Amino acid sequence: MKVAVFGTSVSEEFISVIREFFSFLKKSKTEVQLFKPFYFFLVEKLGVSPYYSSLFDSHSDFDADNKYIFSVGGDGTFLHALLNIQNFEIPIIGVNSGRLGFLADISQEQMCDALENIFNRNYSVVERSMLQIEFEGQKNIEFKFALNEMTVSKTATCSMINILAYLDKELLANYWADGLIIATPTGSTAYSLSVGGPILTPDSENFVITPLAPHNLTVRPLVVPDKYEITLKVEGRGTHYLTSFDFRSIPVDFSTKITVKKAGFKLKTLQLPDQTFFSTLRNKLMWGVDKRN
Image (cartoon, rainbow, N blue to C red; front, top):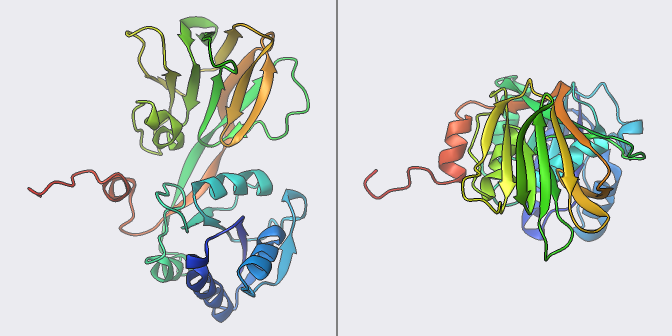
């Protein structure tokens, strides 16, 4: 078996876990294609000599024969892995070295049991919808896809922007606000959640449209079927506004129209036994933490 390991950085407190992780892969005689910048970080910054068979720099030299992709870090690292690897046929598994971790959901304490289950194929595959973003007239934008959300927001701190949102060419609303988030079910527990959006299960076939600081008390987050094509026209002072997809941000001219739709492919992740989405809500967001329970 051959697997890929992606990462950017981990803390010194994670050294013993990272050694245990690579030791497991070595003992199982697994071929490991390791992300080269992560290899140099482990060697030069942490003094760890990871087990590996080959290195890769980007999606251009990534081996499509890998059975799994392990992302070592937090949810941000998981999102970086998508951009650097750009392969959606291979399941990606998040090993959490951070704090919360909805995507990187294998904790340090669970790692050995999780690896045993994965290598014994004791799991189910969860497919996650992604967004495809098109910019009318805007060029040189690499990888126009997002797993969590696409956001438009103002650049000036003193003025709002007006966002005209259309669903299949029918006007939904004029949002006078600081910005607007269009989130996938996966992204419903990210930025959208932090500004009052609802939580969706990963298998929901929906988008969440969540305004940022709307200047109208009647405007609320909206859940719509992901069959819709969403078009955004943005007006405001100055020359441009800001748009972001997951962790990347770029300025966009006000004359640019944005179209958002469901991508024609899905990201594959793994769900291990006793590690359901609802158990994640209870454990990560502490749902039901009550002295009466």
